[in-house]
Image (tube, rainbow, N blue to C red; front, side, top):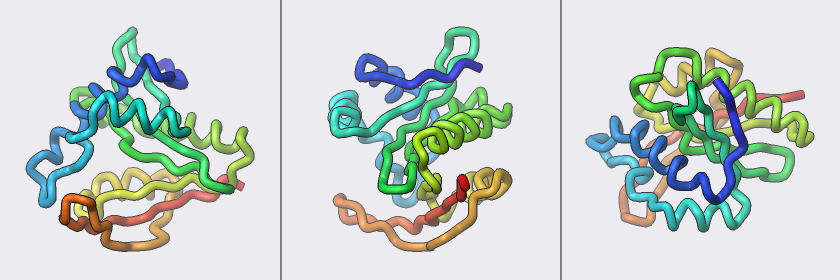
Length: 156
């Protein structure tokens, strides 16, 4: 797998990979807000400092993650692996790459938030050293609320 840092021209690819991966949460209660994101909203996010990585296998985009620097931390979100490629170790490869990138940027912690009702994602992160540091309820702008787990891994 080849992993590249994305730029603004890659936003349609970023969105496509994310939509394909997050469709499984379309019927979740509440449904994922990822499916409402547009090329324009992701472009605006990247113009404000959010970065992204895209993973390719044989020229096909199979994974992506968006992230931003926050003080001594790298915070990532919308981590996506297309359904037909899940369970092949792609997520762990992208996370290792992201951890190395964070360390090169002298970040001490890598962090994310995960839906509390998706134990397979929590287990994935725990299997490579992430720890649950907080459980909370995220109140979204559409009036819905969702239980989330904040997870972190120390890089030092």
